[in-house]
Image (tube, rainbow, N blue to C red; front, side, top):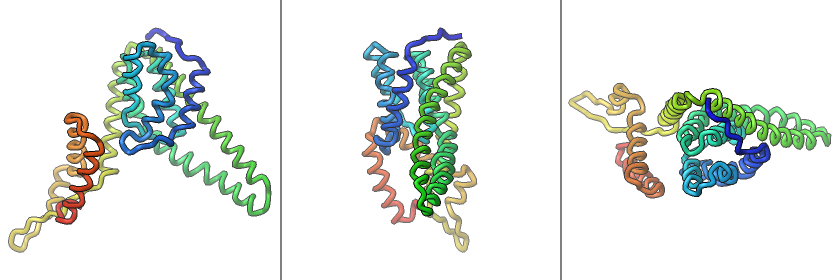
Length: 267
């Protein structure tokens, strides 16, 4: 079992949770999505975990990596990640990042359905019908709903934090196995996003006499979504290996997309 390090207080956890709720989608960008909000949420508590400046900067940079999930359930993910970071310190950065990546996809779907669709529809519908009848309860219902969501989000953060501590303190000796499992889950989630988010096909055809063969059909037989996977791999190579700026890659993608679409090469 890992040594149980008690660096953060309950006040620290609540502070991180509130900072997350205040900034969650306010710093959204198309390169790292919600990562700047994660950094803002963790900035103060990470300083307590890492008194050394170099380790503190390394931890902040680790959280600047891509992150995107449903903001409400993200509280649980971030709470768990913070607990792992508190217990493992600088040697647990990979585990922290893999945990976030592995959970952000599955919980995003659940959170979107529950907190963006189901609950607002139910309580909003009740409040709307009350308002049509001229009842002041319509305002009260939505105020109570907003307060309840606020408290629930704080509880999610604490719940995730306690769960993260349990993972590390009870299974600390096997943390490398957990890290590897979380990494595999994260890669699976990211891999599944490629064919579902990136839609690129080719319109090229090869004609021999009266026979016409579509290249896209051949590629689908070899591997479905081959072109999206290839383009994703190329983009990753340019950004991660060749250190090409994100804005440069985006502009190149836009220009090449327009040209290849007009030529009928890609669609």
